[in-house]
Amino acid sequence: MSRPLPLAACSPSRPRRRARLASAAAFALLLLAAAEGVAQSAPLAPPSPVAQASPSQRAPFEVLLYKFDAERDLVEFEPLAGSWSISAGSLWCTSKGPREELRWRRALTPRGKVTARLLGGGKVALLLRAGEQETQIVVDRAASRVAVECDGAPLAARAYEATAGAALALAVAWELDRLSVRIGDDEPFTLTRPGALPLDGLALLSFQSQPRFDELAIEREPTREALPSAAGVRALSESERLAIEQATQLLEGDDAPAAFERLRAALGERVAKAAEWPAPLLALLQKVALRRPALRSREPLAALVAAATLAAADGSATLVLPLRPAWSGEALPIRRTDGPVFLLRCADPQLAVEVYRYDQKLKYWFGRDPRLVYSSGGGGSTLGRARADEQHDFHARCQLVREFERSGRSIDGESAWEYEIAWPDADDGARTLGLRELFVLHRGDTWRITVAGAPLAQQLAADEIEWLLAQFEFAR
Image 1 (cartoon, rainbow, N blue to C red):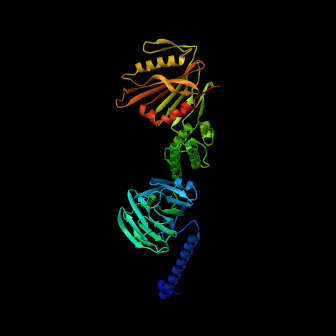
Image 2: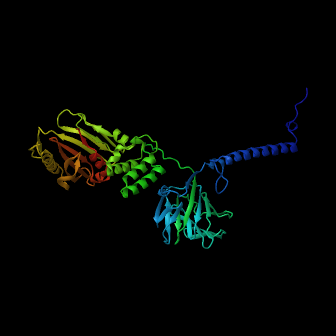
Image 3: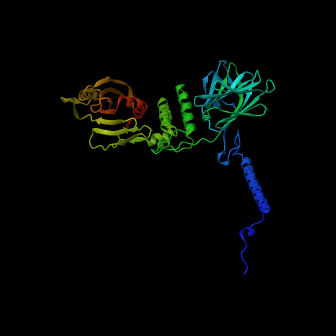
C-alpha cells in the first residue's frame, strides 16, 4: 500500500502559488473598481468633494439650488447686516458697508460643498462657521486674488485669471479638517482647516462693494428628521424651525395670512393631530389665529380646533383647549343648575382652569363672615366682587395684582369683569401662588372662569389662556 505524500508534495510550487495569488488579487481589484464605477455612475451618490471616502461615508448629497429668480429664495436667508434683495435673477447687496452679511438659515453638515457664480466687481466672501470659529474665502475681483482666512489669520492666498466683467465661478468643498477651493477654471487647491470643528453655518459677505450672486448651490449630507424622545415629544426639524423663524417675522410685520401659509407649508401632508406637531409650532399657530380669527376655519387649523373642542355636559357652552399636548380637560357631570362645568389642567407650566356657573334663581353666601348675595339682575359684577373680596380674605398676606374691574375684553360678546391676586405659598416660602378670575353675565346666569397657578406660570401661558377665552362660546 502506498504511503500518503507529504503535505508539501500536495501543494503547488511556490512560483505557481504566487501567480495564483496575484491573479486573485487582480480579480478582486477589478471587482472593487467595477463596484466603485457603478457607485460613481449613480446620480444620487457622488464621491466626496474633497477626497475619496470609504463607501460607508458616501451618503447621497442633497442639493439646495438658489437661482434667485423669485423672492421666495430670499426667505431662506437672513440679513444680519446690510441690505440684500433679488432683482433680474440675481441676489444683490445693495449697500456698501464695511462688512455686510447674509446668513443662510439652514445648517451645514460635516461634509459638503458650496458653488456660486459671482457677477460684477468688488470684494466678496463665503463665510463658513464652526461654532465661534469663522473661515472666510475672500474673492477680490479688483485684484484678481482669492484668500482663505480663519479668525482673521491668513491660511492661503493666490492670484487667478478671469475675464473682466464675466461671471466668476467659485467652489468650496470641505470635510472635517480640510477645505478645497476652486476659482474660475484654475486647478483647486486644498488646505488644512485648523481646529477640525464641524461646520454648522454659512453666510455671504460683502466688503464695501455691491456684489451680485447669479446662482448659489449648497450640497450637504442629508439631515435627519428629529425623532420623538422617550417622553414622546418630537423636537423641531430643520424645515419646521425655519418655518417658525419666517412666520414669526411675517407676524411681526402684521401679515398673519402669510405666516399661516408658511406654517401650513411646513406641515405638508402630515395628519392634523396636535400630538404629532412640535409645541413651538403649535404655539405660533395659535398666536397667528388669535391675530386673525378667520384663519381658525382653514385647514389644518380647523381640524385641530375641532379635535380640541369640549362641550358642556348639558350643552350650555363649548371651549377649545390649547393645542399643546401639555393641556387636558374634561366636561364635568352637571347634577344641579349651578356648579363646575369644565375643569382644565396644564402640566407645563402648572395651571388649572375651572369654569363655574351660578344659577340666577339661587342665593349665594361669600366671605369669612358669609353674607347673602343675589345673582339675579346685575349678578355678574355683584357676585364677582363678593367672590374677589372672599378670596382676598382667605389667603394670608394676599396682594392685589389687579383690582376687581371691567376686563376690557368680552367673552362671546358679553362684557367681562375680572380681578387677580397673589400670595406666598404657606408650604414653600420661595413660591408664589396666584388666582385670576373672570365673571360674565349671560341670560341671567353668572359664569366664572378661574385660572389658578403661579403668576409666572400664568405669564408663560398668557397666549394659551387668551386662546381659551377667545373661543369660549355659550349655547345659542
